Image (cartoon, rainbow, N blue to C red; front, side):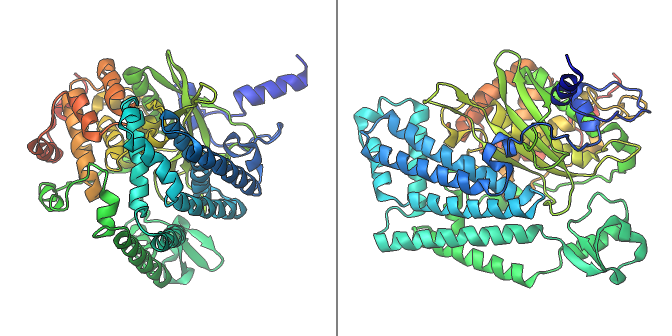
Length: 595
């Protein structure tokens, strides 16, 4: 092999990773090493493939190309479904139509908030609005709706459909219903107009909520300037700095970042008015009634009762005592170990092609099952950077589905976005317990997407009832605070010393939002009944995948819960599950980790 070919091979297959901190005496697995390594600018020795491997997206102009192609394909599929007799092909064509639009819109939805280059963000934002406008018009397209109604009204044909196909057909019809398909033509156009206005307002508020606030350097003490970004004579504050151990830094960040913005307040007020007007136009009492329909959400009279049983306690934790054991690499090793034991799944670091990722510190993971092979890809955008939102979230870039055209399964692609500190010259990125819990939470969403195997992308992974979508992520928080799980990976990044402390003081559960109450109750029941005795039990892991993760939105949420628990939970069970979270003496936490 020539020297040139050897160099190409090394770059392509091994990557150019700097040495891990030399003082380390531990040996990291490949995935741990990848996340404990300092980011390094990639040599672009190969032709750029474009973001996420989409050739056109090597430049911002590519969004216009992919949008035009998607809209052309959409029109062809609309013509096909409107001219075809009712049957399974009706639902398959609807799903192809949805998939084609979602693959462009979902990718653009991520890029518009996460890409470091303004030109990419602006092009993606334009695509989001253009595709979103088309979707709203399709949701009030009478001919398109009629083709689906003909299927659902034909009892003979309907009886021949499998349960998943019938469920997807009903969900598409539900989308028509909440969009105002029943209105006359004039009111349908008004509904579309309001939907499009909401798209603009949503985007304006979303982007505005991520912008940092500025204050003159002279207005805050000079000795804390180093904690914030600077711009000329101004300090930029783009988050709450909640992890800072400096009281004054937290106070300044809180006061400045949350200082009222008149323009954003006006946008929010207009957004709420528009939501309410749309909801009433299409026949709902309020926007909340419209938004919560089709979920397993609590009824309006339930939250006061349930929230009354929750009195969340937070324990003061000194990060410096714990963080050295929670390097990002060790936590990723822990997740890999956990998924291997529960599902027979490994997460493997891959080197992306030139142009495939939007920043040099983005990592690409392949999710591989021991017998099923490659399940999908996770892009990890974990580190803080300028103009990146200070939020932890999961983005679906491409949903999984069974492609009728090729007979192959379309592999899911997702992005996990965190805002972690960068590694330093002397240490890898070290996580506080809350950072680790957030990492496990978001990875719960990612594995929901990876392990699902639905026929239709419209119901893949996290595309299910909103509150049920939080169950897999909240359940992962229980694994993150169980000493038996943590003992598998927590070790000092320099000495290799293993974690040997009780974990009871890391309990800190409690509903973050009303919509999470049901998810937290379900996660608590699943943890207590299925995992608390052995959090690494493969049989339970397989049952969890089979009963809850595999179906996405293709099965009623409560049926999935019943399948996992193998019983029908009562209202008292939900209350007890929430109360349990208040008890700091979980059996698993009081067991001595040295036993």
